[in-house]
Image (cartoon, rainbow, N blue to C red; front, side, top):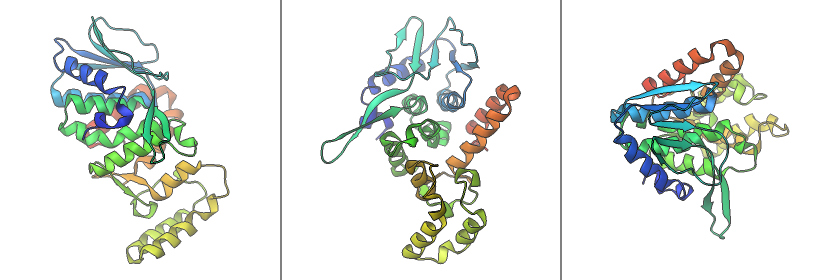
Length: 288
């Protein structure tokens, strides 16, 4: 099963398959363009991985001012749409923007709606361009970053994030682990949790049974249960569902908080930081 086989991608699948076919056969270099932002950096990296795997010439153009090129291009936008824009043929242009979707249907027939981020859409397009590509596979865990960086997880439940997380876990692209199983978690992801206590629980985690682990983790996280932040959804993900992948010491949330804080603090060097971050993702599959 691929991402495009998931119900959440039902409206996007035909367009992304068409886009993949036309991009693979493009007679000239493809431009990846969009505003210079955290989400667009990760979206671009995922697209670039597929281009490199498939041998498709491309150039990146993430700028504060976006100018449409004459040749084929992929335009990353961040305005939500109710349906994905079609592929334009002359010149070839593919638009990726967040799309409102029916993420899943419960056993009672209730439909849970959510938003497919440009990062997730880029991941699905990348899989179509280069299904077994080495770099495409390396950066696949990052399709979760779009929903993590958005406000979707500020609500009680983000069905799109859950569907993507479960898909990646079942396809062995990620491991979903509780906080003590992360070798190097950033304390900024859960302010209010004692970092020394985290280390102490981590040291004896392997000696605890399931009940002991549940009690230790519940006791560790109890101080932030009464706080307004993080949201319930983020709290559960940060306590019990940390995202890890091959070669990672830091989980996805820890990498992202470091990435976003550096991005926001060093405005003057954003272009350089964007380039370094994309290079890290393409070479190592991680931001840091």
